[in-house]
Image (cartoon, rainbow, N blue to C red; front, side, top):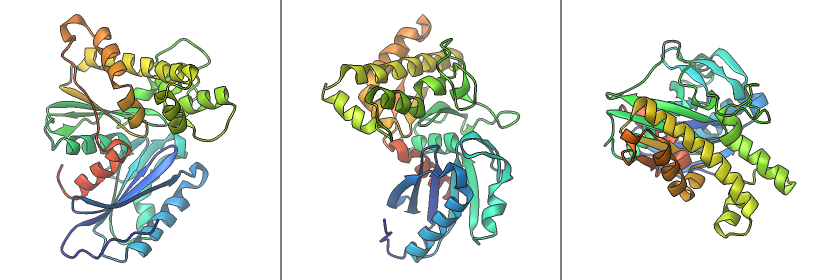
Length: 308
């Protein structure tokens, strides 16, 4: 897709890239205006060259001044050092991505974990109405959690946590996570797990989640509906555990599975409400981000513009 944005003078023109385990989403913003958006499949075996070539392509097609390049990473990140501590799906460990890219591009470049970028995008979607104690759940290839408390992002001691998708949720040994362990939430409710289950049932290959959701909406296949409901059930139970532990003012859900979350919103809300401690019943607030899978892109742009 060719960018057709006109040159905008005296404005911050930011390239925002959200690397996911399945897709790379990218956009160009002029201030808070999303000018163009596209996505490509993630090449996990050659991610560095893919990222470098993608940035070069965007710049060549934009033909106007770039202010910043922001990149969100699916893993643990040291934003201050520009370091990818670990990104299992990308096979990157203790790698300084910012220094690598600065060899090719002379711009302000920063990285952030995708879970944090997505939560900031969610806050932006509600005009930063919620900032006291907010959680963001990224539902995509895996499932991630970010925490925004007292007007700032929560940072764990070693910058590894929270690894919500790797929390133990089931004794069923067939649920094997991409981390190699069994019983992780990722392995039951993550998009990769759902994709595999759907494809086994349909005896097909590729990404058939969106197609299957359409059939579910049309009440064409009860078995497909149960596959979705199984993932929803465990995700909702995990969310109720978060409410019992942290009692947030609200929980956002965003990411590649946002359309699924939107369609099954009542199921999620009811399961969570029935599973929390009685003192929290009817007090939990769940919001599906209106930016959906673009939430991290909006979050990256907010960071580049100094809004957070």
